[in-house]
Length: 511
Figure 1 (cartoon, rainbow, N blue to C red):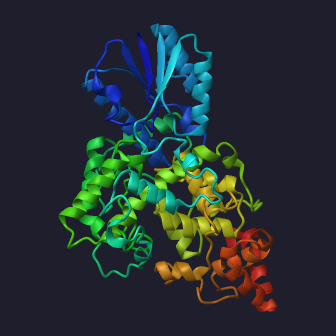
Figure 2 (figure 1 turned 180 degrees about the horizontal axis):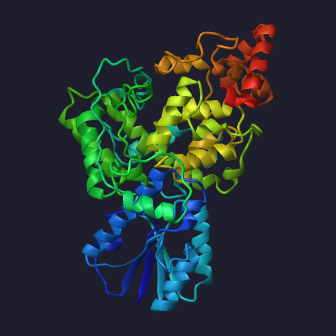
């Protein structure tokens, strides 16, 4: 039967069973579309990375003998719309069946269901053969439970896949979680190897985006593009992480520093989220390297990494499918303010925000603590509408696909889901930032000052937030200590902090 198979831009799984055999009756199609470049304003490096990776994947399939139809963005027959492109190919080429892999975004899932319901031919959907859980597994695991705590799901996954287990009950190292060993501040005591890069020329894609008037954010080095866009390059990044960075990954995974963009982080998230790497092969490679050098690499380095992929990543994906589509509208704290304009420029006197935002603009990357405790923390403390926060995070980061972005942003970062993901909001004053980074050194503001024009804005914003939202948190046991401290605060000092917080919120351009 003459079959058309669709491959989406984040379904670049080189090892999918679809490609095990070549058939003259099967044609694969990939589309560069304005539908995908325009639904949110993306970082230019993100668009370039996906287009380059899709083109490389298309060439890989052709070289294996598969028939491939590839629409570049400026191809004359490209309608820029998924449904129209599919219908056009089916009509013109006489396909009798349409097949696709399960999308990972709700909007595409709904669109493809709608497309198939209107097709005059048979259709079938397949697994992407990527994730370690099914869409419904997490909902089944937590059925009947009041709280959806990630730790228990993570332990379940360790047992299920026999990862770092002594037996079917006991974890290696005697503990499930070494998170307390993953909170060190980096002070330059260990040398950080230079990040791996590929120095590719992507000027042709950049020119295409310019000619087609694709609106993007962020910066790019035309002649020196550093992200992996083939499976082989992704494997090289994985090997480099194991050889040079794993040794101190866990120690400093929460650390931040003005002189180091990546510290010991792997930068594998784009490779995994585009499916060029499988999560299990990444986990297996890291554990295998650790087994090879057990005296040099401690278990806390490895467990901290495995937890992010085996636990957190699968947990967030399951939560996405459990809670969508209502999750995308949640705003339990009723935040309404606008995201400050400096999120698109980095032009702020706050050192921590300037560095984190500028790094994001320059590299389409920031690690999880920069996202959670700098940019996310400030957005929540200034009571920004979660829709605006979602849009910024989804656009600016190279690894941001809605299933992983929105659960981390609206849930973990902004507490807009009212506690489905996190049991308390992840907010802090300047003290946490000072504890985990050198951002406060040389800042225009003084982290130790509570009030005054030169006091750290995070200090005033933090106490104002707790006071403004005290009704939301009055029954939250994990917030009781901070609310007790709030109640004991000097009323004049609190009033001064609230007045300063209001000015920061209303006049972000001054800060």
